[in-house]
Image (cartoon, rainbow, N blue to C red; front, top):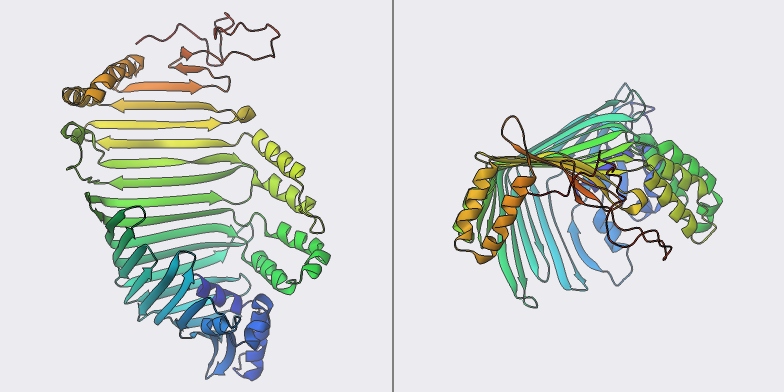
Length: 514
């Protein structure tokens, strides 16, 4: 519901105010604007209603009416009071928006795995905003709540969520390159989620509790194509009939093209302070914990980025061997994603080629060719500079991987500070752990592969080629795979290289010896 209702608010004001008088005629015009995106039946069945209320229009959304309009054998029971927005046209063509989203709702239904239900309560939820129809976006807005509680029950799992006071803001401006630039923030205090899993079939029965005194969300976007996206929604409503959709697919293609690149860039971050996870094996925690995501829009050289950061990590030690405690990470900073992602060419070719009169609209051959073209642009997986720390020990890594001929070609750099401390901990563990004792020589061998940097860190530059060869710090660890040529006699299967002493990494060198 939290996702649906803001959308309703946005679509309600798709046309500029033409008059300042609040009356039934203005309510009808607003209804017609809204019907463009939700269809006339939403009004006929009472799901949506617009009325003049004093100096503002009241837009009511009754989800319960939608459920009641379903066939007699209803799949769920639903209890939710109608949600209302109060909107008032401003002299500059924008709209003042106000809402009270204090709410108590519940629903239940029976699925393949048994009955499921949810109850949600929001206390003292209020919001105000200014909506600009010319941007199809809120140029400013703020909301708050005193608290919320939610309980979700499934056949083998139950979740209880509570939160204290919360606030949220949003702002948007016209983007220089078209569309809208926006920022949004949200903060919630005293967030607690308790999950209980009870599965007799698997014997799994355990509780899990997540806590944080402050949960924050930050998001921003550039060049979001709000109006073209609304135009696509209006087209979908106007062409619900399959025959009509096929007849108007030329218009659909034009609208799809106009919506590209959908956005230039979207970034978001979830942050948790003093994050705790209580489990049957002990308590996990972090003083600071965050997850971030970013994605370019449909472009010829797009990027996708993920980041996971944690500081002040604590991990239950009672189930770990004593020697491993010294190696437990206290700080983690992981950064990864993709680059050279050409979605623009794929999207435009697909839009141009699809034909709704055919089944399927795009042939399998076209799909295969599209994938081949995509891979030919050498999209790559990227591991950004990432670190794992514990005291004087730090492991840092970065690299990238491409897939020429659908085979991996990767370069990875790993450097370690405090490697001797790692070896010492493993050596201590080897005294009581037979498997670790067998693996300990490998740790010594790895050290022999490394290059000592001026600051004392050890570094390994690892290259793996699509031909199967592997080098470490320029020395050949594994030669290229034998070439298979259907018995033409070009390779004796020995796995040796061609004797030139050259490879893609500046020379094969001798087989690496620790």
